[in-house]
Amino acid sequence: MDELHKLITLALHEDVGRGDITTEAIYSGSELAKAEFVAKEDGIIAGIQVAKHVFSEVDESIRFDPVVKDGARVQRGDIIATVSGPAGSLLTAERTVLNFMQRMSGIATKSRLFADAISHTKAKVLDTRKTIPGHRFTDKWAVKLGGGENHRIGLYDRYLIKENHISVAGSIQAAIENCVAHRKSNKLSAQIEIEVTSLEELRTALEFSDVDYIMLDNMSVELMKEAVSITAGRCKLEASGNVNLETIAAIAETGVDFISVGALTHSVKALDISLLFR
Image 1 (cartoon, helix red, strand yellow):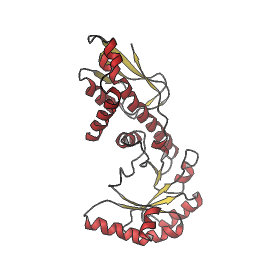
Image 2 (cartoon, one colour; image 1 turned 90 degrees about the vertical axis):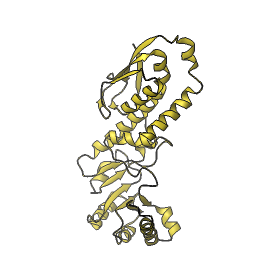
Image 3 (spheres, one colour; image 1 turned 135 degrees about the vertical axis):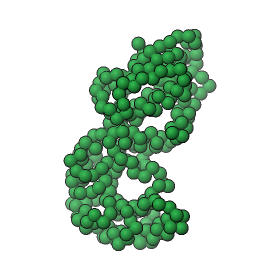
Image 4 (cartoon, helix red, strand yellow; image 1 turned 135 degrees about the horizontal axis):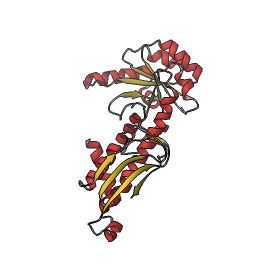
């Protein structure tokens, strides 16, 4: 949870700064309050555990009681959690908690929509690195809570050879061989994935047993079906490029193993949640 602690510390620092002057002006220091987190629309809740940590960071005397668990489906009007403690502390923590919960719940809600759309197939929905800088840990956590799966976390945990890498290396063959050599010399266990844009490139990549995943970039459904047939299970196939809720089912039905969706995190709509004092 080190990454989460650093993120919460930064979030509170940017919001509270030298102090919550409005609360300091109004709050005498003795008032106690109770409040409820209420869903203002249907969706999947994420960020319960994050909220708990934020409140604890602001004031350890705050009591936070979740009514639902992370990953639960809620309807408009449902109570998500209750919180009680010093009124000033609740007011200071309010916006930071809601910022985390609303974004994470929006990501989880969208992830569930995509996962449900292909639940009749073997394919799994993957996220990407198109996350808010600094928030990758919570963005990807929310994807999992919504029923999606995480692709690589960063540049360090999987080799992913893309078009620009191939241009620099000079060829698909050279790019793969360089990654294999790098992995061996550095005694790494990271898997190797390569992006291809044609069936010819796919056949070239399949010549290398060290390739674990092949990404089919912006291929038509018809080409993806051919790619699945050509690959015949020799490695995992990931479909990528302009995937949306209208197209994802047809893509999954081609037989690919994974479908990456940048929209899960790069342009998500926050779920509307309110903190109401009683």
